[in-house]
Structures are given as C-alpha cells and as structure tokens.
Amino acid sequence: MKKTVLAIMLAAVSLAACDDSTSSIGYDVIPKDDEITAVDSVFHISTQTVQVDKVLANTSICYLGSIVDPETRIQTTSGFLAQFHLPDGFRLPSKDILVCNEQGEVEADSCDIRLYLDSFLGDSLTTMKLRVDELSREKLLSEDESYYTNLNADDYILPEGVNKTISYTVKDLTRPNNETNGKSYYRQIAVKLPKSYGTKLMQAYYNNKADFANSATFIRNVCAGFSFKNAGGKDVMVKTAMIGMNVYFRYHSKTEAGNDTIIDGAQRFGATEEVLQTTHINNNYPGSLSLSELQQKPCTYVKSPASFFTEMTLPVDQVVDGKDLNGAHYNDSISMAQVIIRRKTVTEDEKFQLLPVPDQLLLVRKSDWETFFEQNRMPDSKTTYLSSMSTDTKNYYAYSNIAPLIAYIKAERDKKAGVVQGESNASRRAKYAALEASDPTYAADWNKVYLIPVDAVYTKQTSTTGATTSVLRSVKNQLGLTSVQLEGGKDNLLQMQVIYSRYNK
Image 1 (cartoon, one colour):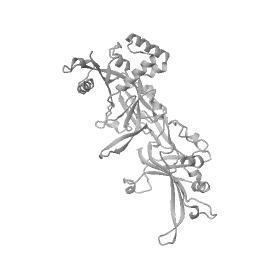
Image 2 (cartoon, rainbow, N blue to C red):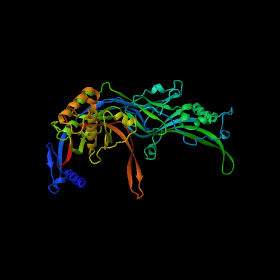
Image 3 (cartoon, rainbow, N blue to C red):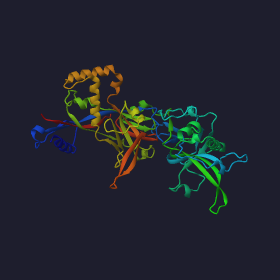
Image 4 (cartoon, one colour):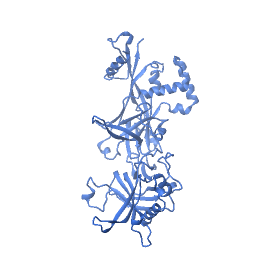
C-alpha cells in the first residue's frame, strides 16, 4: 500500500510548480495511517572554474596539431605515441617466393605510416609540420601503467632510431577537388619511412617468427611504436580515425594461365584498441586569461583537453538538516534532487569563434574523478552521472535526480563522524565539526563534485523483436578541443530542486 501511494504522490509532485519556499502537499483520499506528506524546497549551489594540468589518456582516439582558443587565448598542442597490433595468425609470404635483392636477401620495396583523419578543426589549407620518431624498446609503454596527458614523449624516443619531419595540409593539394571533396575520400597524412626500415621488419620476421607471435612480442622485440609530434604551425587540430604502418614488397606467383608473374604485396600493422595509443597535451598559458580572472566572471568554464572543469559545492548540509541546520529533514527521504545547468547565452558573432560544445558532461565527486577513469568505471547514477547537451535547444545539461548521491554523502559523513541512529541534532553537528577539524582534506572536498567533459561511446544492440537500442560502452576523458561557458560562477548561484517524502505517524 505504501509503495503504491508513494508512486502516485511522486507522479503528482513532478507536475507541481516549485519555488524558494517550502510547501507541504497532502492527500485527503489516502487513509490516515498511510498518509504521506511531500515537501519541496529549492537550495543554492555555488560553482567555480578549476584548472587541471592532466587527465588520463586511455583512449585509442588521438589528436595532432595546435590551436589557440579564442576565448582564453590558451594554445593547446597535441601529439601522441602509438604501438602497432599484430592480428592472430600473422604471416608474410613464404621466403622462397619473395623478390629479393641482387645479394639474394629479403628486401622491402618501401615503407610508410598513414594517419587517416576522422575530422579536424581549423583551416584545411594551413601548412603544419609533423615529426615522427621511433620509440625505444628499452622503455616501453605498459598496459599495467596509467598514462596522463602530461607525459613527456621524448622520454620514450630511441635517439638513434628512425625519424622523419614532413609538412602537410588537411586538404590534399596533390589531388583534384572532384576527388578530395567526395564523401568516399579519406583524408590522410602519409609519412614515408626509409626503405631500410621496412627491410629490417621483414628480415626480423624471417629470422625469428616467434617475435611476431602476438602484439606483445612484436612490441618488445621488434617495433616499440612511433611518436607523432606537432613540429610547427598552428590553427589546425586533427582527430585520427585509424593509423597504419605499411610494408610493401613483391613476390612471385602464377597467372590463371600458369605463367610466371610478380605481384605487389603489402602488410599493414594497425594502431588499434588492442595496443596503446597515448595522447600528450601541452596547454601554453602565457598571454592567456589567468584562472583568477576566469573565476571572477559570472559564469564557469568547462574546457578540454586537460584544461578547466567546473567545481560544484552541493548544499548537502542544508538538504539533510534543513536550511537552518535544525535537523528538520534528517529523517526524511529525498525523493528527487534535480539540477539543470544552462549554457551561458552567446551572441551570433561569438558562435562562429567558439570551439565545439562538449556533448557530454560527467558529474563525479572531486575525490573520485581520477580513479573513475583509471578503473574504467561507468556512471552508476549513484555517485556518478552522465548528462548530454539538450538536443532540442543545445542550451543545458540536466541531472534529473542526484538524490542517491546526496544520500550516499550523508551516510558516508555519518559513518566517518561516528553518528548513530537517534542521536540529537546538536550531537551530530558537534561530531561533524570534530571530523572536519581532524581531517582537513575531507572537510575541504566532502560535498564537492566536478563537471568533466567526456567522450561517451555507445554501441547499437538489436533485440530479438528487432528493436534497436543504444548501450553505453565506455566513458573516457575528452581529449579533443571543446569548450562551454555555464551559468554560475562568482555571485551567481545555481538552483537545486529537492522533493522530500515522509510517512505521517
């Protein structure tokens, strides 16, 4: 009976208007023994911009280039390290059918690395420079370690290894427009490696095929990977879709008629999710707006990569104990706690200058945000929540109910302070004060959360009835360029609408 009544009450309350005053909503049709009172109230949330110098770089999506943010004048430069994967059953043609050099030795025709581009920001005609360096096998990227975007790529480079610097533009100027403007054309950056490097890879295979048994042995004994670094130019940032290292060779074969022929062959080594790609980022701040200047604005910033988050201070004290901290709601159930965070209005002229708005923001406790990504966790709607920019107006992020988070923080705080059931409000307040005095770190962060731009990956699943649904597969730090100004900031509080429920006794 009580669960049914509560469900009816909540459905009705969700349609009721709310304001800053507290109101009680009763239902005369409910038997007095089971009557529920719903109380709604609005609390204020303070927010500020915080700066971060690194985020976890555990994604196979890589970025390359350099762009100056028109809002803050921060120059962001991205590069990455990439390993290469060997598929199961990897093999090259039998050595006795290869076309060899005059000394009868295995020899490649050529070798290159190709970066296929998914998208880009900036001017497609701007000339950029790329430096590619072979990585050292003495210091390998390891799947057992967590790599952040402040990684120093030079620490992993083989000093005497293969290196190449090239100039490129996003638009391929060597091909006619009718080819490069079509949807079927895949933009790419081609880096020609020395022919001798391709030969070295082939000879390594025929000398010891065990080194090519899997990706781990290949990376450890043959090719540790390559570094890709912006070496000059700005105002372009590219996002890779695929990276491949190709070795080209020739081998003898027969035509259908039985005649001898020579066939051109190639072997591709792909940088895929099975191996590591690690993006490194440098945000150059000289001449840009300082953090203190940004914090004085009547808004907050969320920017990626590895730049700014919005920090929210949740009014857990007031929600749990009432606005006067008199314990008025300590024993009530929090049915709903809703926060809607609107984007600051921008002019039409500004829209053309701004970076893309992040599609998703993760709400996570300040104390947990690094472990969330390190442990590959997913939003659980208890301590972490994912919200997408509204599809209708492109103007807000909504967290429809963070009541479980409020309850979790309340329970955690009570446990840490040693609060027991039935304790007086005065006693609880004294224990809270003692806890905060003994643990300054907890006292500073216990009710704070971050809004973090993320890259949420969904996959399509089809049921037995034919219905298709999107299933969240992973949530990673957003390493692409995004930016949004949110309402809030200095002297500009946000609102959280809370609905309580209690059984009358």
